[in-house]
Length: 257
Image (cartoon, rainbow, N blue to C red; front, side):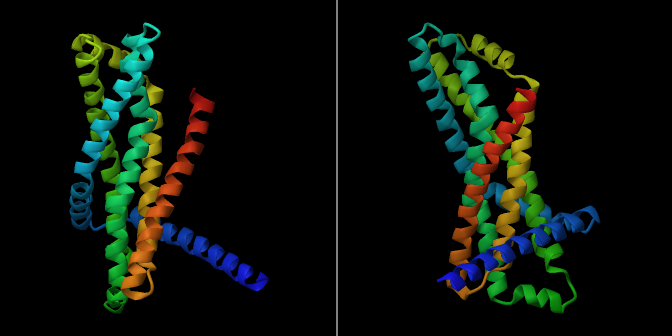
């Protein structure tokens, strides 16, 4: 029993070390300008198409629910005019970055892992090495950079549609003038709200791209292994996003309030 636990512990430490060196290789290639921008643009399109519809639907529904819950609760205290502040601050600081990152992990992230995993199990990654091409530069860097570019754009779309959902509830249920709602929304947003959301999205994009590319690049076990490693990639991405969100929220609130 003890030897097995030690073996598992050593295996996890080795995987963590490999993942850190893997990320170091990616960043090193990017800073040295070893980026195939045509492949990056192809990945941006592919990842965006995979995620945008479900992000739009989820974000609009989230804004609608926030508006409904806010109206129901604030109306009891005669403060329904604060619905706009509740919706926009919830979306900018927490809801849009986290929900979009989770959706992106489950859609585009899973696709990245499955693609790389299939290539690895079919020896296509090894074939690029034989041809003298760095597989990380050729296969991983475009997908990683696409994550960093696509996720912030998806979050912006999520925020806009979420605020639109809250706006519809405010004018149809709370009977607030549209101009007043928009004014309250603009008045509620400060620099720290944009800053906190931007920082979170940046970290989430790196985390999701890193985990999904790593799991796909080191997939083993044939078709069964592709499924197993894809599931691990999504699960680890979810956990990493949620944990990092907690840490980042605490840091941001501590220093910027």
